Image (cartoon, rainbow, N blue to C red; front, side):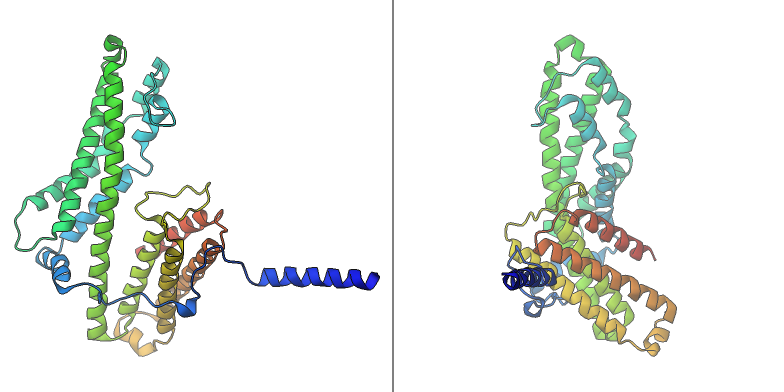
Length: 353
């Protein structure tokens, strides 16, 4: 009997040890050995599409920055969206339906509203972009320009709606009509708010698609001119880090670290496989960088210490992303959002160096 108990205890220990050694997948994704690397040469893009993306930027090199400036200023305005948070707390229920406020809530809303905070940077960058869109250059990226224009129009509608709401409560019009106009303005604002998010999502993804093509084109040119130089590898690392960020965040302006990570893609296996493809390419790129000799460093005016410091930071980032992928793959999503935010902070610091 005692011997049998020993066998049972030993068996349980063995099961626990084996279970700790390999985490069980909840998403049936491929192993890294089955995953291909990320395409770095735009091989899946037709010549005409490549020309539509590249020619306008060759003609006007500042154009890409102007698209990017709109995104940056929009993120600044909406991280978090102070107006929406303030308005929803005082005037909306959990389904975004209008709720008649009391004087205390109206005063709270007006006290927290600073119109310059929402508009200054965004309107300047939108006007710059509208000026570009009104021009008739020889080459145009029609798809990106269309989505940019739609996004700008949606933001202008939202800002106009915000102004109407502010003036309505500031001028105490609600005392004359018992919030009848307030209800109409609320519905109009919520509709414009949702529309702006939808248009931003489409504009953002078209812009990122353009960015990827431009960066891959630069990587291909560098490879042809200099071979696998430090600059070539750094550009690859930069692109791969951006790809990770887009897979983690999408067009979301922020991630709530108090909640578990959620895969929004319906095809979860494909999502994890794409993460693994980025990870595999990053690991191979790091491996290539380790093989670079001192002559390459001197040719590109990079000190050994500077190079080692960069490599060390990229290696740490790569370890973090691999852990994130494993946690997503095994369904351990509670810590993932916090890890993604930490990843994003590290990448931003690396870019500034």
